[in-house]
Every structure is written in structure tokens, then in C-alpha cells.
Image 1 (cartoon, protein in one colour):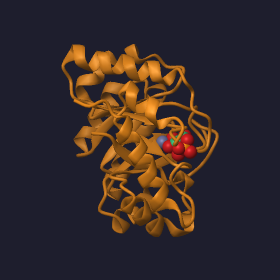
Image 2 (cartoon, rainbow, N blue to C red):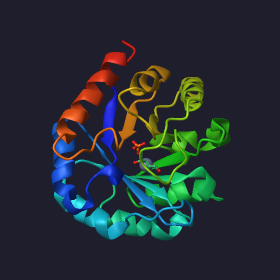
Image 3 (cartoon, rainbow, N blue to C red):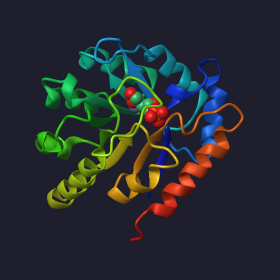
Image 4 (cartoon, rainbow, N blue to C red):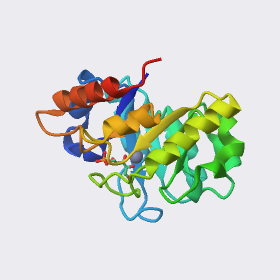
Length: 223
Ligand code: DX5
Ligand code: ZN
């Protein structure tokens, strides 16, 4: 089943609760929260205090995408703030297995993220531990960037790895997912679609989310 994860990076940060409610009415089922530290990526966004506020504003699961160096130092804080899913970058974790164990130990669902230039076969050993794999289809740091087409091959490779290994992790994709790219993303096999700029627009968020989800589901391969 294809699902939409609205990324609040493109929302109006002064009205997050209202914007999330609109995205939920449009069919969003998990809220994607982009955490940036100005080191791992060239931008700074939000951290655990905002996640704690979001936790009170919505019942939807919070999917925290950590684009930060040393994520181990913050896993407990995100757990305490109420994060449900925590994804860490392969590129930021020299001891990825340990980091994923920490996330599990804190009661959250672990995910691993791959930058566009990182090969999917590098994570084969840890796939049995993860709840989801997030394929970045832009270089992380900003919303509204153009979709990188070779990301589709990475999604297809991951679908094949999951089949061969008989695993059940979810395949998430993030970056440039919009009305003109969503069909190919879904056809490649991505199930959890993160979208920011294609969803959030004052007064139109509910409609844009619903339309993106409609296009995604229309493209989904029938079982
Ligand atoms: C980029 C973030 C994305 C971002 C996507 O570093 O990880 O979640 O919000 O934005 P769009 O959907 O506008 O490409
Ligand atoms: Zn993200």
C-alpha cells in the first residue's frame, strides 16, 4: 500500500499544527520531520523541542529524518520527545549497527538513509534490523530540489534485495516527489512517499496532498 508522508520542511513553521491537520485530511499517514544540524547538511532546521510540540499536535506517527553528525548523541532526546520512527544516514554512522540498536533500544522504529551517491548493496548486512530504508532522491539539505532519476534504479535494486532476503522493511523515498515524478517512483517500488513542496501551500495543502496520493495510487502495480 502506497502512503504519503508530508514533509513539514515546506510548511509554514508558525502554523505547524494547522498545516499538519490539513495534510492529514488530504491523506497523509505519517509526518516526516527533517532534522538538520548545519554540519552534515548545509542547513539548520529543528530538533527535539519541536518534535515534543508536534507530538501534542497530532496523533500521526512522527518520522524523524536525522541529517546530523553524531546521531547517537541525540537518540534518547528524540525518544523522549515522542519520535516514532528515526532514520539515520549511512554516511553519518561509522558504527551503523550500534546506532540502529540504540534506536531499537529506545523503542523507536529504525531506518537507514542513503544519499544519492551511496550504493544500496552497502547496507545488505543490516537490512534485517531496519523498519525502513530511505532512498534520498535529492542531496539532503533543502526542499524543492529536482528529482535525481538514477534513484529509481536504487529503489528497484532494493526491491530485489528485499525479495531475495525475504525481508519486509518498507521502502521510503525523499526528495523531488511531486505530481510529475510520483508515478515512476511508485512503479519502481517505493511505498512510503515523502513530499514537502508538492504538498504544502497555504490554503491548498489538503487538496494537493489528496491529488498527489491519488496519482500515486493510480500508478501502483496491482497485486
Ligand atoms: C531534504 C529533505 C526532504 C525535503 C523534501 O533534505 O530530507 O524531506 O523536505 O522536499 P521536497 O519534497 O520539496 O523535495
Ligand atoms: Zn527528509
